[in-house]
Amino acid sequence: VAITNSTFTGNTANSVNGLGGRGGAYAGSPDSLSITGGTFNNNVAFTDAGALRLFTPTTISGGTIISNNTARQSGGGIWSDPLANDNTPQTNTFTNLTMKGNPADSDGVLGPNNVVRGDGGAIFHGRGTLNLNNPTIGGTGVGEANTAFDGGGIARTDSQFPPAVFNAPLLNI
Image (cartoon, rainbow, N blue to C red; front, side):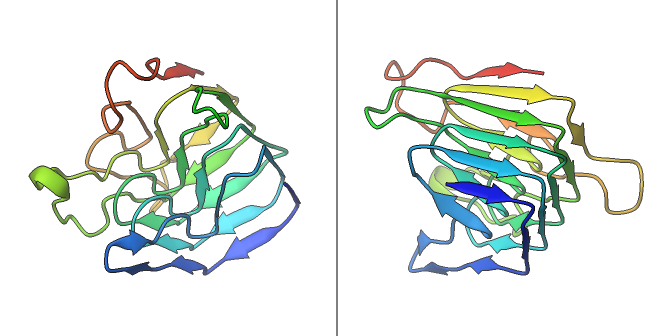
């Protein structure tokens, strides 16, 4: 899938009886995803990934802006967990990406086992590798900060996933 110079604004991913609610603007798992330029703004996910829920290798470039998206749980802007069809961890690469004003954990509600899972205001990254090249994450102006329970900018963890099954995630900035 290729998305070029597009605008995704005001979309909502709802949750029904605890199911769904992921990826306010986009959720998918094709073979790969490429996003070049464009804006993802004011999208809402009732679970994870205010703007983008990424399950497969993804490249974002060309000055893409992800701002003011909201996730009730993790990944206010992006929820990243790139896997191959056999669940082998893969790589996501984001270049010249701007992420501002994306809150995770917007409802402050405790999740399973009384754990608040609102991590990664800008990006929540699970398994695999995340390469960030020349990103702008947050800012000093009013409303430009990305916020979360843990990792206002970036949260990197594999703690939600079965131990000893996957390699620990890798983050390159």
